[in-house]
Image (cartoon, rainbow, N blue to C red; front, side):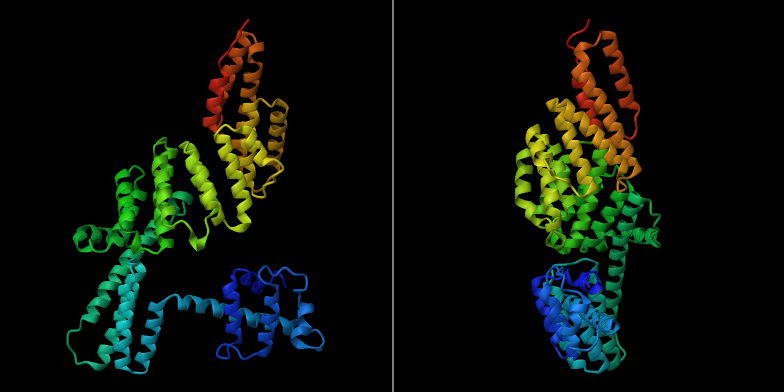
Length: 488
């Protein structure tokens, strides 16, 4: 029972939704089956995690069916029916959140019943809903199209043959919906083609772009089109820094025109552009990246479903560390770790605090933070090992360093969740780190010729090994370790 589709989906509900779903099942309009009412009452006793051992089919059966002999098929059918009610409830939640679609469906039914006065009244309410909403994205144009489609159908039924603006408005808004949504999809395709070489092809895109560019002035009052156009231009040319700057300015000016989830997607295009620039050697884009993250945090754009992704949390801290904005980063962790999902909080909070201590060169505190912590996620596990590696290296904890390197190698070898590329990159890092450490601690006891040969070999390996993780750090410690104090 614990792993059924019903229980899996029930776990996604919050306390208020549990209460509302129970009321939904008990409402005669949606359900008249008393056994389904009894089933939901019993199941909800085990909310919110639904992990109690008594939540099993044989224990539930007599509560629903009394003294009848156990019939699993009968119970499975009831569970399936309750799942269908849950689907209906979730659809109802969405319906309640979409007043434009409510009005559209109402107009459709009023049209079927041939009630023109009611159509006129509810069409006006539809227009009022649209006017009160600040959103002006592709969905807005779709709603406008649906509204004028129904108004035009009503006019055709009851008016004489003459010009009516509803048909023109229907066509105009269909064009705006098509253009804006097509550009949105084209941006998504272009982004995925870059990241995973997906090979998506967007038909009619050249025609749309040509039309937009040739009629640019007529689209000035529709920023959604302009913004997606700039995203596309930015994605098409990696060096198009002006498109990035224009996009950033437009997003800040027109934030209110988009729902937060769509706005978060738009900002991610800008974020990815900055990351590419950083990877190409333009480190000053870290400042741009932090500025974008601050805007997202201040305007609460970065919290889809009310939570902060653990990887976004980590990325923001990494940017803060790279800029050595340690006080801001510490404050960020304290203020925003509460927005992490409960199941992600421990890993994300512990690892990132250790990363900040390490960046501040407080290696003892970094090690203490990671002491006796076993991360379940391989990315955190790898990151924690690297923090420990750097700490033992800087503290010259020789035995601990060598033991860690050996344990690190075994972990990489045995872990199937780590890609071959990352395994190779980290193994190469461990080889070089160990060689540099030996040069650092043993260099003073070596002859000049032996020292120079060791240093030359390490330099050659550091330059030739590819891929190699944490190469900037390796270059830094190599330069420090290459200062020979004594020679004989």
